[in-house]
Length: 139
Image (tube, rainbow, N blue to C red; front, side, top):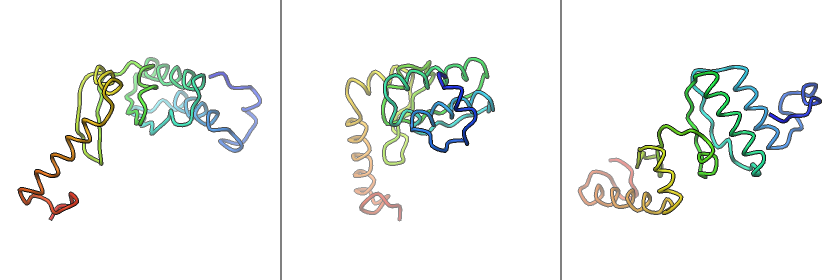
């Protein structure tokens, strides 16, 4: 994971930069080998080089540990570097799309705006039918 050997003598996650912490998380993932790993915004704050290292760590886990991953992100950059099986899109806590990895290309091309419009239209229809009160809160 391209970490200096001196990192082995430091306290866990104390004094590390954001990118170093992400690399340590990948090291922990590879050592612990969980059956399911949930990576919440693992790509947040990473420069392009650190993103490449973290992506390689994720792929190493996926191939060597035969584990399952849920990668949560607001940016598709990391997904483009991974062998993605399924893509799920959430807007305001609702699952609005589910599909193959090609859905990532659609998001990159068109953005999230269409998904947001779809959610707004569904909420408006439910409000009109009296299924939820104004603002999307169930009665």
